[in-house]
Image (cartoon, rainbow, N blue to C red):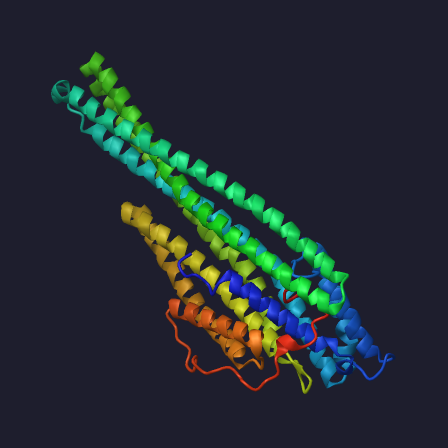
Length: 475
């Protein structure tokens, strides 16, 4: 991806802090009602409890249909407090509604990741196809210029050079395959470690559910630290997998090169038997190679059209859905206004998630545009013009998304810097704001007043009661 977002591990930490802040806000019974018989208070408690059952702890729901039904049910449970509650109850209802909207964005974001993976696979195939097309054109050109009278003198020298090229290509291909195999072994080992650590983390979170508040808080911290170890290993595995992904197209390209060399060696072997027959055969094979080149070019255009459609339709629909839910979460959280309730962190966290979504989308568009532009530089005629046009369109859309990303990141950064917090919580939010500012700079933007210090006099949110489940924003 052309522009790295503010950071996955940092985003996870901030989401946890935002969720913790929401739980602290909901933990005091004085905020939701004056007595046990208050129906609005009961509705809020019921909705909050039900929301946590959809995604207990920090684990996102694994069943989208179950989660969607749960969010609808939770939203219906909030209705009494939204319509008839006091200011604090309405504010808390807005916080819960915002969390629901963030949760509703997850399926679309997952779908987008799958679509982008499909786009990446098609781009890899296009690069291999382009290598085959160029090789076919080169083969056609070489065969078309075949001169029987000169072939006898140069045939042995040509065959020797090709054999050297073949040996070099085969050796390089074998080396790359060995590297891919070694990377696969390392990735498998890391994934095995991640599985063990994730199981340990899950066990700690399960244990925390049955412990008293103080012990549960300590166990939750231990679980988070355990999760960070797994996150680090996952990053290592992802880095190795990226290295492996880069090697595979190179192996495929070498395979195409080897096939082309073998084809030429076969031609030369036949030429040794009969130069006259070779002349006629070369003409026929040049025509076939040119036809293959045209077929490869047509396939390239088809793949480009398919990728363009994925960006325009499926990916755009997923982004629109996820973006709409996150924007709803932001606006809903901003409506949570009461003397005892502050949803500014929840709004900032949703803005951060929206910025990450848009940055990832812009990066995907830029990646595709770069691949198309590279193909355009290697192609001539209509194919080159088609690739160049698509690259320009995708780049323009990426630039627009970058500006939206900068705006969302700027909103999130401002929210984190203005958060009323102290101690470890304040430091974590300050670091998150710094990470976002660097991401904005990488995107080519700047935010005025980004050096303003965070509020020094606010109460330490991290020191408040944390007996509720600590989960990701949105359930």
